[in-house]
Image 1 (cartoon, one colour):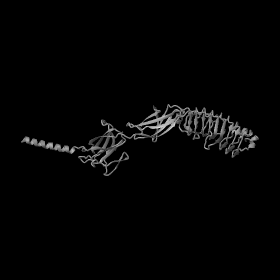
Image 2 (cartoon, one colour):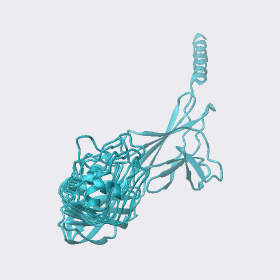
Image 3 (cartoon, one colour):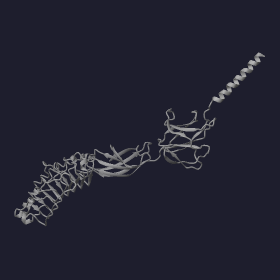
Image 4 (cartoon, one colour):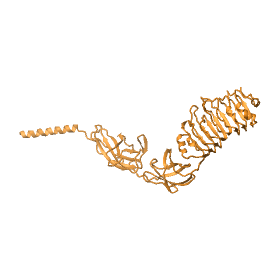
Length: 465
């Protein structure tokens, strides 16, 4: 009897303990399935079925991805996913980007995520964790691969800018992975070195150096992407220059001029334009020039900043115009003897110890103009000590000059004089030699200056006030 009572008591205790455990245990979410429904070069779309919780807790999902099926290090790509895919939806939002999706073949796979910006032809391991409000979790794994990129790159346009010893190639390349191509360049059948400079929008710029001057080259380019896909060869031809550059040049940065300096050109058959010259430290690239058969234009574009004053050390002739805008040429053009076109100086800049164009003997036209916003006006222009001939017109307008003594050695002015709107100009004695030696041909127009002498005034010695 006693034994029966003990057995009954033990059964009752076990029942009570069992009930207590059922009341305190909280079970993890139920198992669910995950599948890959689509992959391309860069993305993998995966879906999974709903996981439910035994205690009816709210389930959320975290998505992880590893770039190696053997890796144990995952990257969290999406957290706390709760939104089910709406039936008929064809777009989902992934990290702020709307991406098109295909409807699922099995509507049970009602959750979806797209892993983006992946690598071509790579195996990935995906992990989806379903977790309830109490922190219990259930994990489902998936292996998936991105596709191999079978898109062959192509070079569909090339800009070639040959120089004396190098050429610059601007390549437009069509490919899925624009930053991962290798370039092979052959010149006259031989593999040749190139080095990359920069990306420019959809193109890539390369320099091909160590070339021979005055030489014709047959070029062939192959582009290979990081999946080993090689382009159809692109063929082109070019000829390097000799000691003269043919064409127009424009520079706005010091790096451009430094690269040009490697050519050691003796001449330029074209126009040379330098803008924002206050950005430059030197013009040494032009120290080997002897002649420019075109125009030279140098603009400072900042009235209170000084551009470099080194360069053009051997240039002796310009068969065109020389235009200087807010620019001090005191230490350059030291050997310039002739300007066939117009020498135009806008807003002359000069300190008390400087003189300009000391060996210049002749110009076509000479124009001196002032910029009204110049903070440091020039009252006396010094230099031109060798200038004897102005083969065209002399024009001086709207300056702060007090005199024009820099013209004192000029013997010929062959297409007239126009000097006006110089509000403090009172001394015209720099014209005495030209006028008294009958070296003036053409109209004589002097007006709206502080003093306006006639030809007879200058001949009679009344050249200043």
